Amino acid sequence: AQKVTQAQTEISVVEKEDVTLDCVYETRDTTYYLFWYKQPPSGELVFLIRRNSFDEQNEISGRYSWNFQKSTSSFNFTITASQVVDSAVYFCALIPNQAGTALIFGKGTTLSVSS
Amino acid sequence: GAVVSQHPSRVICKSGTSVKIECRSLDFQATTMFWYRQFPKKSLMLMATSNEGSKATYEQGVEKDKFLINHASLTLSTLTVTSAHPEDSSFYICSVPPPGRDGIQYFGAGTRLSVL
Image 1 (cartoon, rainbow over the protein chains, first blue to last red):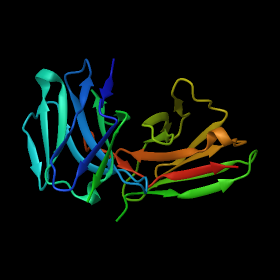
Image 2 (cartoon, each protein chain N blue to C red; image 1 turned 90 degrees about the vertical axis):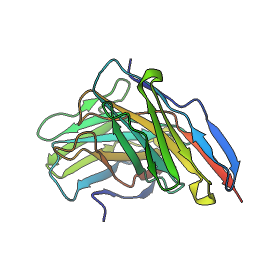
Image 3 (tube, one colour; image 1 turned 120 degrees about the horizontal axis):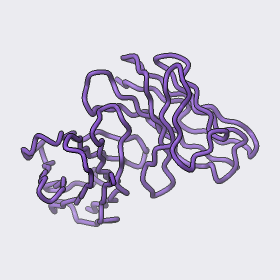
């Protein structure tokens, strides 16, 4: 089965706290792509990162960092020193095997950052 | 600028009317486009794959006579919600994979449909 699980439905933090959003995926394919998207209240999906299955290097982009671990089939996302503008729904997604196929989304995690 | 243009962004219609949503690829030709549906506070679910020059491929449980998809050109796919009812109210969003860029997909801004 191809599946993405985001166990955290909602997370609330106070500004400047660090927060980690969990993502666990399932796929039988050896080649696949993992993504994180941000969806603010406007609804538009904002692309954050893409990672292919052969690249397990962790990545940092400003306050954002991603930890990809194939051994545990996880692709977790950490926001350091969270800000109110980070409040949104965050989706983890998977494209199994063949590029050009549709994304399989997790159920999303709603992050609320208060001041 | 936007790579994928989706119109309209919001539509309110009466029950029984049909609504057409356009998804246009601005920067490249696309033989495939995807249509997703998102209920409030829910995830995005793939409805169908739009194929240029052939019939769309619908996911299980999606009524193809209800949600008509036409991929008339390499830059345009349309989704028509026929005889809309309140339960069709949802957020519809399209995505387009560019050729040769593994795994990348560009999303439209989405269409919020409200059926009264």
